[in-house]
Amino acid sequence: MAFQPTVGPNVQVSLGGTETTIAINPLDPGNLVGTGNFAHYTSLDYGATGTSTSSSGTYGYGADPNIAFDTDGNAYRQELTWLSSTLRAIRIGKYTNKGQTLSATYMAYQPKYKNGIYSGNPDQGWLAIDTNATSPRKNYLYTVWSDYPSQGATTSVQNVKGIILGFTRSTDRGATWSTPIDISSTLAGGQEHSSSIATGPNGEVYVAWINGGNTTTQYGLYFNKSTDGGVTWGADTFIRSLQGWGSWPGVPDVRANPKITVDPTTGTIYIASGEPNTSGGFDSSVIRSTDGGYTWSSPVLLSDGLQGAYKYYFQPTISVAPNGRIDAVWYDTRSNVSTVTGEYAYNLYYSYSTDGGISFAPSIRVSNRQSWRENPCVLPCDSRVLYEYQGIASSNDRVHALWADTRDSSTGQTGSAYTAQIHISSAPDVVTKTATNIATTSATFNASISTWGLTDDVQFEYGLTAALGSVTGNTSVTTPIGQTSTVSMPMSGLTANKTYYYRAFGYYYDPATGTTQTTYGATQTFKTPRR
Image (cartoon, rainbow, N blue to C red; front, side, top):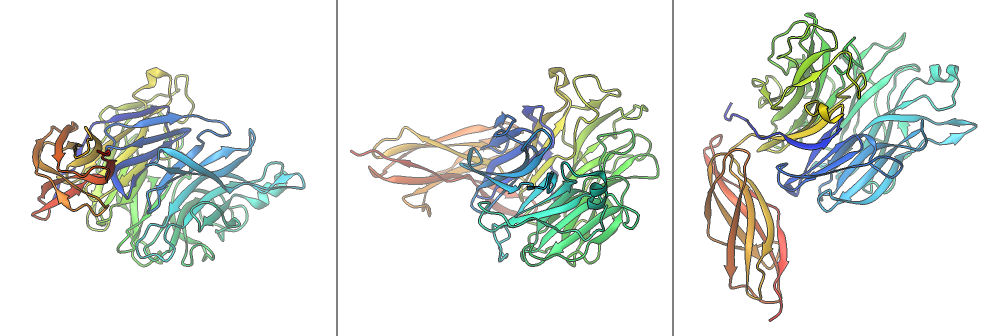
C-alpha cells in the first residue's frame, strides 16, 4: 500500500447517541453532518469541533436516522417519527446552511387508516440520494424500509402479510413522494429486515436486506435492483445464507445488518454483512459484484483478529471514496478476555481496500478507549447498548467515522457518540474562516489548518467573482497530529463597496503519486464598506 492511515483524536459528539451515520458535504470537505437517535450533529472543521443538538417528540429528531447530501450541499435526514405511541412514519428533514438549518420537513411514508386498520408500521428506513455525475436521475431521493404488520390487524392477517420491503422515491428533492410499493418478490410471511439502499453511476437503484425466511424462502442475504429509477423491480436474488437478522444468541449487540455501496466510477457493488463462524465467534466480511448484481464474489474478511469463542467482529459499515478506495469500520472484540456470554470488551476498527475488495489492509484501531458490555447490564440500560449501525464517510484523503461506545457509562447513558478522522494521505485540513479587520480597501484573510505533523504552505486566493483569480503570498505551517493552527494574512489594495470572494488552500506533497497536490477550504465572502 502507498500510504499508512493515521487516526486523529476521538471527539465526543453527544451523550446517548446510538445508530449513527455521517456524511461529507460535496461542496465543502470540512463540513460534516451526522445523525444519532434523537440527535443531530454538524462540524465545519473536519470533525475537530462541532455542534450537537438532541430532542424527541412529535417535532423533535426521530429514531433510526441516516443522513445524505445532494449535489448542491443540502443535507437530508431520514428518520422514524411517531404518529402515536405505537404507530410510526418515515419523515425527511431537509437541512441547508451546511446542515445547520432545518428548512423543510416531508413525510415520505405515512400509513393510511381504513376499516379500523392502518396500512403498515415502518421500521429502520434507509435513504439514498443519486449524486452520480453520469446519472440521468441526479438528485433523486430514494428510501426503503421494513413495513411491519398493521396496527389493529388480526393475527391471521399478520401471518399472511409478514413484513414487506417498502419503497418510495422523490424526484423533486423531497417535496413529494411516489406511492409506496413493495419491491420484494418474497412470498407472504417472509421477514424482510435491515434493508440498505444505494445508487449506481447510470441511475441504477440497488437494495440489499436480510430475509428472515418462511417455509418456502431461504434465510439469508437478498438483493434487488431497478434500472429505471425505482419504477419497476426485478425478482429477488438470493446471494448467500446468513445466520441471524438480529443478534447472535446471548449477545444482543452482535448483529448482521447489511450495508450496500457502489463505486461511482466502475459501478462495482459492495455489500458488508456479518455471520457467526465455526469457531464460536462472529465475522464481518464484504462481497462484490462487477456485473450489476448478477454474480457475487466469495466473502472477504474485514478483521485480521484471531478467531475463536467470544471473538466477535460485527456490525460492519462501508463506503467508497471517489478514487475507488473501499473503507470499512466495525466493532471488534479481539482484546476481549471475558468468557461470559453477552459480556465483552470491544473497540471500533478500520480497514481499507485499494484493489476493488479483493483484499483488505491490516486493521487499525480507531477508538482510543476500550468499551465494555456487562451481563447482566447494570441499569440504566437495556439488553442492547450499541443498537444496529454506525457511520462512515469517505473522501480521497480522509475517512470520517461516527460511532457509539460506552466509555461515558458513568453519565448514565447506554452509549455515547464519538467521531474521529482517519487521515489517508498527507493532505492538510484547510478551513477558510471569516475575514476580519474589514476596511474600505483592506481586510485580513483567516484560515485554520491541520498539517498532521507535516509542513505545508498555505495561501489565499480572492476576487470579485466566484472564479477568484488573485493569489496572496504563502505561509509555511507545521502542526502536530490532531492540532490546528490559525493563519491570518492582511490584504490591502481592495476596492471600496465591493463583495469579495476568497478561500484558503494548501500545497502538499503526495508520496502516493510523487506529485504536489492542492487542497482547498470552502469559499467565503465579505463586503468592503463605502468610503
